[in-house]
Length: 77
Image (cartoon, rainbow, N blue to C red; front, side):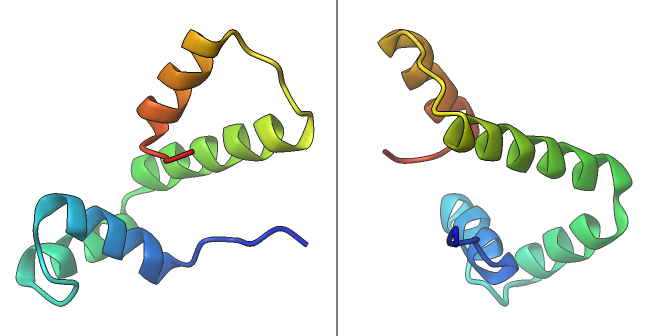
């Protein structure tokens, strides 16, 4: 079974990158926005689907394309 990232981990990652504490007003506002915004929900669902397909189908990309995708998605190898 695949290890899924939790909502708390996502919020922590976003807030860490903003230099904010998880319970700071800015992070709480981001969380509230993500819960309400269908555009953001769709965006994150598309990212999740891309990552799932990438892992599931063991897609082979040229090294440069792979690095750009990982960078764009904000992931670490």
